[in-house]
Amino acid sequence: MGSRASSLLREEDIDEIKKETGFSHSQITRLYSRFHSLDKGENGALSREDFQRIPELAINPLGDRIINAFFPEGEDQVNFRGFMRTLAHFRPVEDNEKNKDMISGEPLNSRTNKLHFAFQLYDLDRDDKISRDELLQVLRMMVGVNISDEQLGSIADRTIQEADTNGDMCISFSEFTKVLEKVDVEQKMSIRFLH
Amino acid sequence: MPGYCAVLLQLNLLDYFSFCFQWATLRMERGAKEKNQHLYKPYSNGIIAKEPVSLEQEIQEMRRGGAEPEFDMSDIFYFCRRGVESIVDDEVTKRFTAEELESWNLLTRSNYNFHHISTRLTALWGVGVLIRYGILLPLRVTLAFTGVGLLVVLTSVVGLFPNGRIKNYLSDKVHLMCYRICVRALTAIITYHDSENKPKNGGICVANHTSPIDVIILASDGCYAMVGQVHGGLMGVIQRAMVKACPHIWFERSEVKDRHLVAKRLSDHVADESKLPILIFPEGTCINNTSVMMFKKGSFEIGCKVYPVAIKYDPRFGDAFWNSSKFGMVNYLLHMMSSWAIVCSVWYLPPMSRMEGEDAVQFANRVKAAIARKGGLADLLWDGGLKRGKVKEVFKEEQQKLYSKVLVGSSEDRSRS
Image (cartoon, rainbow over all chains, first blue to last red; front, side, top):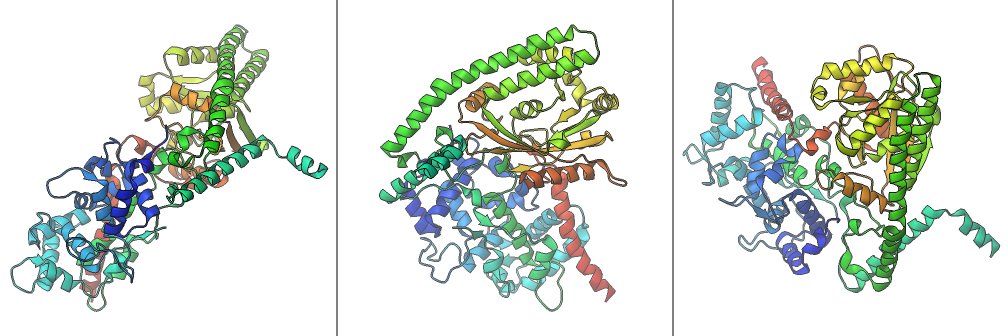
């Protein structure tokens, strides 16, 4: 029988997700269909393997870090709400943002939240600081075997030197934000969702 | 009035079906609007708009002006966005499930808006079910059994003849007749284009693969030598009978792994001008007919003429794609025989040969591009084997190499200045 994806999603759920993330009704149903097609186990939640089955994601050097961003601390299943909450970070910023994220009082796709998403890709142990070690590991993921340890080390050192203002040899979130203040984060971290 | 009748007569059966399907869809849309709900629309138009910007372009754009740092913390944005884009919509995984349609074709299996059906629509659907399962299916199954039975019996009879022109003539006729019965068993409405390019002896015919029915569709219009693995059971019986009448190429499971053996048998076959052209599906697996995926280079290394064929099914009347991870063969055939019809178009393309300085992979891609263009399908470099297997590490390493070049490249510039 064909997929009944849309009938498993209730109108109340759609409305809640709409309020929380700002996606439109049709976008939510389409994304639910996508969620459902990725969910090979058909248990209403995605595991890391479900993500890794996407070839374009598997060849992305930071694929594993991105997948990790979908899973809350210590969990290895993400349900549709969590999936949408993470995707909401990539909604383009509109001028008339009416929806608010419950916790931080800011919409999920604000500049700060987009920057925070990127920050978490670097921050491997989720301690709100990017240490030299973490930076090196992420750099190594991005370049593979093509750059030597020494060269990579000096790149990491230079980056931390330029960003670190309080001398703790780590990059905090505010230092990260300062370094990227001239970058058009809103455009670079947005995906054009069709209506 | 007479003019009206004339128009009605000119519309053929398929047009009436189309009209019904469109009415069904409109009815559902109305039902949904009345209940103040939204209709589920398939994402055939895409969920997101992607920009095909390359890694280098994007990273250069992101570099802030002034002194060029080697690495910028914002470089991560590119990988991040690309990664999430592929989570929302990627080019590969959607090719392995049936295409979703805008309008409903009154088959339960392709409906996603059940709760919007009115009584009138349900009645129409009910009548459809009665016709399809009560009348069409039994008729078709009988035809199928007849076709297959005749194939086995008659090819064995032809096998008794001594090798020669009479045997070949009879074998061709028998094969064609039985395949045509099978075509009727599926109610396949096929339009053949450019038949002057039909494959000839001493060549290989390559086509895009959507379903096992592809074989029946092509073989009912021309005679081919089939290639495949030896099966047990009913399939094995059919294979053994067919090979009595004319030479087909069946491989044992162990032989399939040996690429040289496979290539040798294929070359020997095409070298013999009296033998029929070989029919091969280089994708190696069934794809859902919206795209053509990577062609395995084996058939393109042999060095003979290649006759490309493009097959495009019209999914409105019955989706022919075989999702082998979801449905078994019997289930699939039942689906096919209980659809309205299988409608498809076959284009015979002019023969192609390997050019000077072209290797097998480039030749394969050239043929693939021609087939994709003719059939209106997307031309993808991805391997159909990704349906079941993992993507090779080497592709990730390529991405890493590209990015490293961007980093190291800028340091080389600096050391020069």
